[in-house]
Length: 330
Image (cartoon, rainbow, N blue to C red; front, side):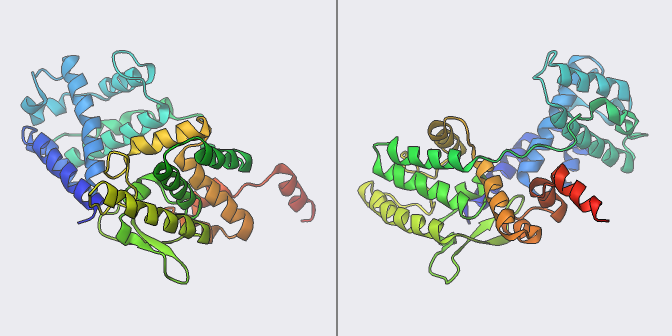
């Protein structure tokens, strides 16, 4: 069992434990989700809402475990609006962005729709909340792409700003692998040595992509990334022997275990001066690929975006001049 699968199992077991005291008509909603991480996240959203309703005495129960179906039928859309407004203003709860509020509203809508279809409630009250109340004014997120100068400076700092040879070689391999593949940081953290296929004519890695537990994706990597990985593997072997440890994880920390998200965050913050984070390098890859090939389908397949529209939104940009020139010849 690989690290991601094992982690998925642990999250599932932890969630099952949490759900033991939750009324069945609530907990049954979560069997609709395949990903344990999604289940856990969405349970957090619904748990916080239910606890807020209890605190405000809209649900007159001591705990979530005491909630009955009849209590849910007494909740109104106005009460949900008040909760979402509290999230927006940060009154009594942690302030949320409009994007986060929209995500939570969608989860609440799915939850109430499930209860409505199963005849636990008389209506999906979330559908009565006006959409414009929490609509973000930003119609399209700006994709942050580091400049070549910023990337060059970042790599130079990786070489010069560290006295630990193992860390230098590992950090360079991490950065060069992202730059030479466009994989996500979580996918990189989950990699095991067995996932590397460097001796092929076209080297590649096998990864469990976003939201996947069993189906692996084949992701091609650059020759430069291959070279840095080969250098790191030699260094890794020495590291294992010196510390008398055995581990399947590809990238190891100084604590002699798989690197964590905190290690990745610290690496990028420290050596880029806060200018670059891992996902920006993923966008850098997408931008470079599109500039070189002008093939958005190729970009979508390499970065494994869910749709062609998503890839196009990020990487296909038309200037006003290009549009004006095109219209002039019609």
